[in-house]
Amino acid sequence: MDDELERRRTEERALLSQVAAGDRAAFRLLDQRFRPLVVQVARRVSGDSWLAEDVAQDVMFEVWRLAPRYDPAHPVVTWIRTIATRRAIDRVRKAQADRERDRRIGSRHSDLVDHGAVERAESVLDRRSLHRAIDALPEQQRRAVVLRYLAELSGPELGRALGVPTGTAKTRARDGVMTLRRALCGQRTHEGGGAPVPPGKFDG
Image 1 (cartoon, helix red, strand yellow):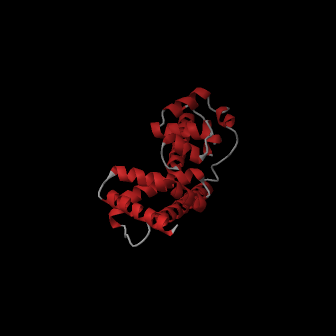
Image 2 (cartoon, helix red, strand yellow):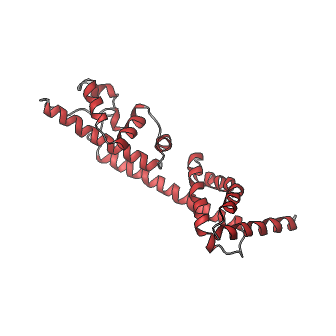
Image 3 (spheres, rainbow, N blue to C red):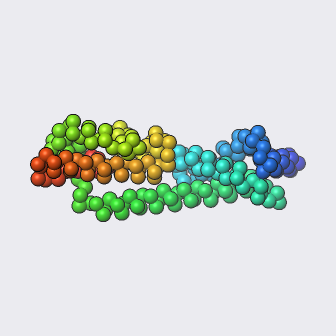
């Protein structure tokens, strides 16, 4: 068993040495061998399967980038596991910071937020006005708003749909909501309405 383990470690060191020299075929073999371990480590740290897959992408890119700095005195598996653990912890902390930022923003605007159904807003504004305002949003914000609040995707689902990190996707949706509300309030003012548009589901 010890001989087999040593043979495997020698093989992995050789693979990583080839990766350090820019060998893409060697990197693909290394990726196939270690990605399941990286996903397992990231899932254990984060408790989130989707985030674990995302972390695995970052980790394997870092393995490619840092391969020339690998110290062969240490097993490759230990080196990669350390990178995976560090990356997963960083992502969990970032996700927590994003949630805290969202909480602070929500608290700051709590006097403006009413979480009633979207029909409340549409009872004040014509549906066509709402649709025009959505259509006028920048493309990235429009897609984020429609998927987040009309299709009711969760944060991770939104990130996957847009092909961006969850925090970025939620920021686009939030920015779109604020742009939409300004546009709707502007329409009310232009049409002679005195009261601001009551916020609805789009404030979520």
